[in-house]
Length: 427
Image (cartoon, rainbow, N blue to C red; front, top):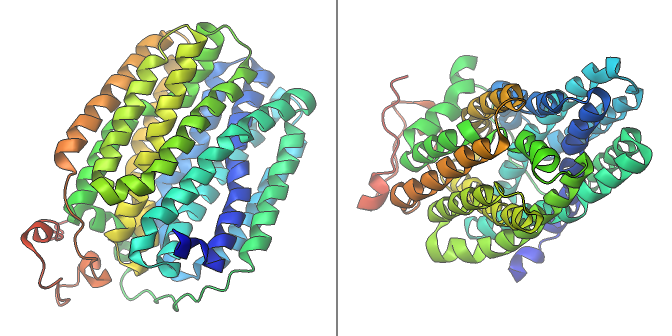
C-alpha cells in the first residue's frame, strides 16, 4: 500500500480522476431530475438515463481508438471535450429543450466509456500486477465516497439554482481533471499499428472475452444481472415518490446512503482480493447488491436507507473485482478493446432493461420490480460462487486473442491455468 502511494503518477491520477468522478456522481442524476421537473414524467427521467447507456453499443470502435493512441493524451482530450459538452446545458430552459439533455447524456456516456477503459489500460502501464487490485480499490472507493457529497451537492444546487449551476461546476471539474492529467510523467509504449482488417481489430476484444473461461463466465453472469438491474435508477425515482412519499430531490439522500455502503465495501476490497481472489469477490458483491435491493421494497425510510447502503457495499466489490480480473487476464495492447467489449456485452442488456423499466414504471408496482431485480441478482451471486472460484491464468499474448494461428500459447502452465486458456475462436 505504501509503495502504491509513493508513486507520484498514481497520486496525480487519483487527484485528476476524483475531480471527474465528482461530476460523474451528480450529472446523470441531475439530468434525470431536470427531465422530471420539465415534463413531470418519470418515464422521461428514465429515458435520460437510457440515453447515457446507448454509447455502449458502439464501444468496440472506442476500444480501437484507446489501443491505437497514448491513453494519457486521450484522457486529457476526452476531459476537455466533456467540459464543453456539459456547458451546452446552459441553453436548456424549457420542455422543448429536453432534446439537448438527451444529446448531452449520450455524449457524456461515451466519454465515461473512454475514460474508464483508458484508465484501466494506463494503470496497467503504470503499476506492477500485484498493485492493480489495491489501485482499482482506491479509485473505486474514491468514486463511491463522492456519493456522500456529489449527489447532495448536485441535488442541492439543482433545487436552489437549477441545472445550469450543476453544469458549470461539472465543466470546471472536467477541466481540472485535464490539467492534472497533463502533469503525469508515465512513459507509455508506442501504440501498435493496425496489422489486420479493421473488423478483426474491432472484434478482438469480444473474441478474447469469449476465449478465456473466467471472462466468459463473468460476462454471462453480468448479462443475467443487468437484464433486470438496468431499471435501478428509474425504479428508485418511484421508490422516493410512491414508496417514501418524498420529493424527487430525496434521491440525493438515498445516493448518499449508497455512498456510505460503497466506501465500506471499497475499503475492504483490497484485503478481500488477497484473501479470496477477485472472482469470488464479484460473487459476494452480487449477493450483497441483491440483498440490498430486496430491502428497498419496504416503505420504511430507515429500511430503505439500510438497503441502499447494503447494495452500495456490494456494487464496488463487483466493479473492483471485474476491473482487476480484466486487467490480469488481458495483454496490455488489448486492454482498450477488451474493456469496451465488456461494455457492449453488459451494455445491451442494461439498455434493454432500462428501456423496459422506463416504459412499464407507470403501471407496474415498483415493489414487484425491486423483487425481481433483487432475486435475480442474489441468485447470480450464488451461481458465481460456484463458477468463478478459479485461479488467475497467465496473461495471454495479443496474438492469441487476435486469432493468429502461428502465435505460441502460454507455456508451463499448471492444470488449473490450462483450463483458462482461450478456446479456438470459431466466430
